[in-house]
Length: 253
Image (cartoon, rainbow, N blue to C red; front, top):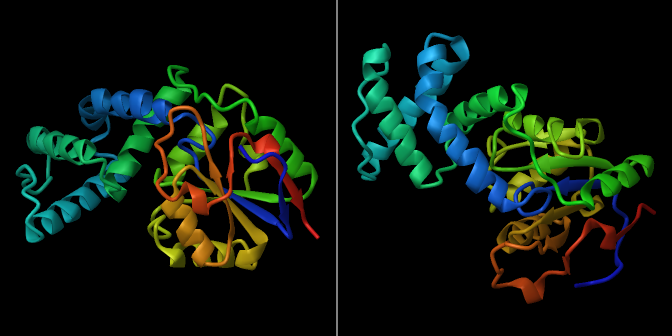
């Protein structure tokens, strides 16, 4: 643990979610199984909605690319009506099994989770240092943004329904992989541009060292968040680490 990690010249903070703000177990042991168990019933109920049809169009386009690249996905005929439901669910479950960062899948999962958050069956656990840190950064005029592989919808839902209350009032921007890969330095350059900050004025906090390396290459300041249950990071010695947001001392000057 590094006590009193001083970050000078920080005007904005960019946060990962899993393993940084909320335990990885919530995403993998609660959210993913929740969506998987309900995907069929959700599609039956909302099959003809414009939003779901747009997600299915994205999934069909990804399937065609999977075929071209020889990934051997389960068969997915054109999704024209509910007669293709079994094939659609089989392909979605195949994507889930691979933990694919699929735009169509992530969007559909977000819609299913929205129902769960709205009816109270889902609530996001967060680490106890998160709310005090966000309140402090807000008072100091430091903008907070999120960058996660989950869709922007899923991000907003999670922060609106945490065990610490609605935290969306502390968050200015949300970014998902439509911005780019979290391993690509250009993604961080784009984010800095979109939030109108020089990269060296942005602090990115994540539990994945390779993401931090990409952000650092783009010019951002970085901290590795080490939480219970997080995967060990092979390059941990090259990255300054924290175990709590309370260890961070931000100086904006």
